Length: 152
Image 1 (cartoon, rainbow, N blue to C red):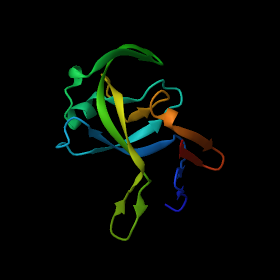
Image 2: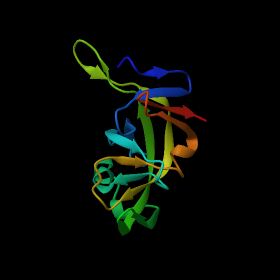
Image 3: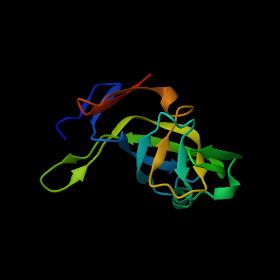
């Protein structure tokens, strides 16, 4: 993708509507489980990062056996259970097209978090303020059609 630019601690992504990136998630307690690739929306209105419960199962976590449990609420919802699990998150650069296939590379070092898996089937991960965004400076230029993440 020609519009992607990257320096040692900043990556710039093109976008049309929503700031979505690709990430890899890994179970920190069971390295035998393969990393799982999924889309993630940078959600500046979300207090914390939430991951759909279906991903919890794919990663090999037992949903209700997290290290903590919370009740989440959001726009039009309340009383949704979340369970916290140790997870490694790796940002991926946007796919680069080649003659034969598309591929992505990791961006920055993987980050280890205790993240909330939510008892709701979301279409993607929501990257929130208290965990993910506190590690980055997020800049968006809607008119020019790009956003960037700078590791701070």
